[in-house]
Length: 442
Image (cartoon, rainbow, N blue to C red; front, side, top):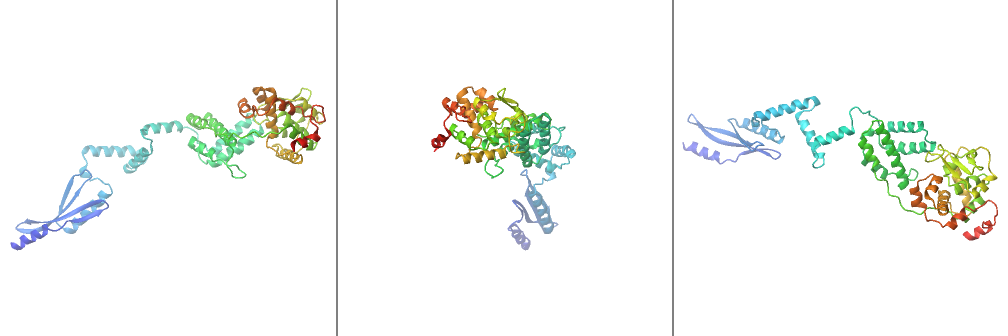
């Protein structure tokens, strides 16, 4: 009897065996018990469920008790709930949830995981059904699945069919072709934020330097037109096109407009070859862009009517305009005028790159620093100074009154403007002697 009592006391003093799985601990207590006058060891597996309920499982065999403890610890560490804890209502909800997810090919575990991720990704206060409804508006089920590149091709073809100028089409091909290469995805999946970031990061194709604000603004305008076209074709939601149209254009740096003085342009004209004098004079005294001059035909230079016809096909803005021929421009053109034929002597140079290079070489020979677009800038500046009618100047230049007002107003005096439009091809009593021009510049 004393032997059994000592054995009982010794068993009660033993520490429990602990089975651990991560942060989960299941304990095995060994307690002696009497049965039929004999003393036996009883092994109690003890743990707590997620609900906090304490559970005990008595097992006679110590090895079986250890195996059961390991199973329970593994189950709890994996987040599994004991089926014994579930009420009839819990079981019904689980079964209903499983039936709901079956048509979508989702298990209960996968479905709840996706739901948790979706709710985590939503802005605070946004309901999941609101996000789903917004997505459905932007991605209608019956909308054609068009890539950005496919829509670019369709858009340019549409513009060509509507009579846009070759210059405008070429500009769209360059800008939107680059945009299409950057977004090899469905157009409906492109967001306004992505477009804003794309425009901000644009670089100059030749040297990799950041693109000028004007170039980035032109690209943004082309992209907005593309998305409006996609809206009309029902490829994207209206909200998407509106968001793209609302992207704030890049801020323009307020740099000075590069112009020539009357003395400088007279020197350039004097140093130019006879075949490029008419094109130089038209750029300086009619304000045509170099690409517009490069595509100009003599049949559109109407000296008798005293105007130059810039056809929509040759205009950067794809709109026809009539530019007045001033008295001094008429004098520069009269001896060169022909019934028809290109004004540009550089064959095949429809963009004006070769012609512009020849203008630059003439300026170098004259000892005058070449200013990009300087002849057109000078015309607008001096025309605004003499005419004092911004809308009229904008009409002649093929530009907007807002640009004329903000960039060209008050840059020259009326006297300087009159001097500019008094430069003649031959010596005149009102014109400075060419021999004096070099001295005045030096």
